[in-house]
Length: 184
Image (tube, rainbow, N blue to C red; front, side):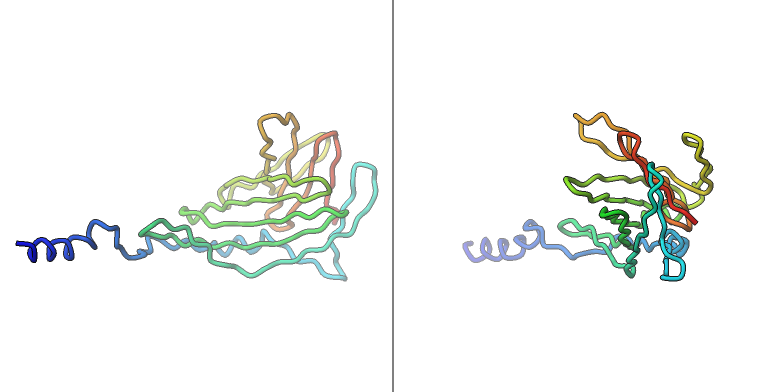
């Protein structure tokens, strides 16, 4: 009887102990159209910005290759694809990450603004055909999406980024009427 009990324990132990395979539930690549979200600039055509005081800045862009990002649980996983870039403007960095979604017509875009004294997160998910025309304080922008800052519960500021579908960051509006605009 003891041997049967020991045999049952050996047989049933793997079933109840959570032994499972790392099963791929889905793989979601970034659509090819997302490549245009990451413009490249050269020395002949540098990234130029102007601020609210009419001061001109030259920026740099560093793009990275696509990478796989895996979200996993104990037994299952899903593979997403991400692409990153870093833009430098006036001693500030903007880290841009596009992440694929389960819907091949959508993309998630996050921008971390890193500046002296802090970091702010702008982001949103949108359809690849969701770029539109926006007018703001006399400025007009075509083919952009609006990425809003996600403030903490005690902050009352409004900050956002207009992101162009082929030119990248088009306009950055920060608290206290400070802004940067990309120039052609």
